[in-house]
Length: 352
Image (tube, rainbow, N blue to C red):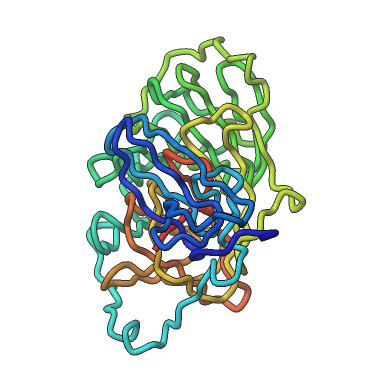
């Protein structure tokens, strides 16, 4: 065999037992997937030995056998035949799914703790020149994150921090300066930035501009206001800003994405990406991470088990870990989104 057999496009969800040895099938011919049954003999492929460390850990073992991070899925299946299936929104089953239009405050509630929130309808507070609204929090069902939308005009915001948290910022609109613990960074719309634990930040809009930024912290905590900006910038991680670069796009079937903030600039817990969804509905799937999606342009629909809700530019979607969902783009030009996953480092890893 010159290449392995694709046992199935999507990975296998496995709950590990600490100390147990697992032999992951490399050849794809085993009848006891994803584990070896000896069918590799004569193929040139040998199974991979893996000893579990943490008891009860849930992992995704690769089923397509093309992963570069064996035995774990790395999303390679999304670009193999059958790896990025689409769903028919007009099927009899999907036509029976109820469209939820009623709101609980600024939120449209779907299955589980999944919801869509419209920031313009959320309760807004002010601190000096800064206006802010909490969109995602533990009180609203999140386990790993807090998200706040921040907006400042001509004046500087007061310095603030999320104690002991990694923070990822996304500039939705405007331009100006973001100061991270004394170090200034010039920013524009669609830039992503990383603020390390113990650091603080402040926003300054350019003249005649309004700077609107989404801040996501993990693990979730409340913002803390500071009297002065600390000078504790961690120079071991000098690069803090990532801009959109079409050369960095990664295909995911008919969709694509670019990682903005991730482990390459020191964010080990949170990964931020920006992506495009052409007019289509993905097959319903799940992730082992918690995810937040901000709709930047276009209109669409978010589907869960037996509910769906319309989404449009400006809306924020919260998806709990392991929540069944499907995001559909309805606009002829598709939808542009920015997402944050935590804990996680690869937005193309999913299971069915």
